Length: 556
Image (cartoon, rainbow, N blue to C red; front, side):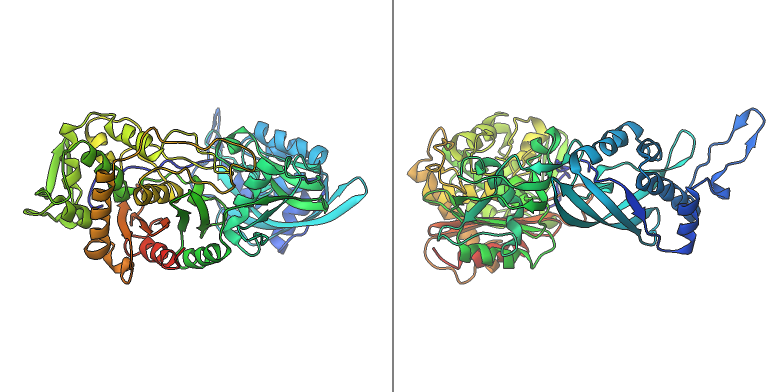
């Protein structure tokens, strides 16, 4: 936490794909209609002057007429079935051709009505209404999309910036739209009490339900129906995205999959994350690893399970475990935290350039004072933190099998200043709320229990195990510093009113391009552990802290 070197997050990046057929263009204004009806020729100001033997390449911002002309050219060709011409109206003819040519054959979408709205700068929003028809079955399809016009660098020509999401916002690069018998039968997901889990009731579970269907649909006893769905390509699969149903033409017979989710805790988690713009949280049972809740403000990507973010000072739990086990420090040992610390050419700072001249390690942990951790770097080997994360906490092994796609954390071996940054959860360290809830759960129980959403008894899969268990002494030391943090440190405000066995750790992770850091908070209370992150929210104690604490206060 504090003024350290900013480390960019890895962001999963995938592009978007198409829906199609014959399109009837409904224009939203007289100016647009002229171009639609004429097929969209070049506007007067779309022609750059030329001199003898030299063609001038037009540069600079696009005019409104250029945006209108380029978008109309693309939409008109698409609506009239001139797919090669439509593809040529984009800045990536080959990619657009592949998608457009597959629309009629695979998606069976026809009678498309397109209604453009007023352009917003270089972007033209539009709505789509269509019919999906397959083997005498048909259903309506409606959605909103948009296209953006760009200027080609080579000749200055305005063209549609090709992205598959122009056709449908759920499509990514390499994905396809397919109508037919779904490859995977539907499932009926149940909570731990036997109640049905639906995205309508629990909006955060949309991606989770897709993942459950992908994994268990063929073995849960259901029968496939006829659907229009997004079939994910290799890049999307690698990013952890599951196939998605867009239109159900005939219902299949769902199989049943029971999860470990608690309906009460899940409902509360949904309510808590809704209080922040970009929040995610996971709640676990430390004694077993059962996932009781997972929620995200953004329902498009499951950051709670699949996020890959620097965890900031919450990583100091793992760092402290290593330091205690190596007998480099004890909680009550005197250990100053200098205002700055130089390591391999970097100068590390504490938050607000604070310092603890005469204090204990426990006080530095509670205040989340960075340099009390980084100054141990010269006594450590480059692989020490990686080994600790893997061997005690089960992190970074890419072998968790929770029942749906998940990212299991990453603590790469690093050297020099980057190794020092890793000690405070920056550098190359990447985690998500699932990982950090598991860290708190491991401290509470004294041993790693791989989190899971579906019992391994359902499919006889093997859960991941840690190579070793922390000693009782190390567990006691960790609980000591985490309890101090919850009572007197940076987590005290959020954890106020707690009773029994509890502990917490806050974190803030700086990210390139963000004015505010990501705020993290992980804690345990009895047989509950939870972790949350609020992206670009600020300090974890003020942002993610209240979310996590509210869920822990619900009790078992």
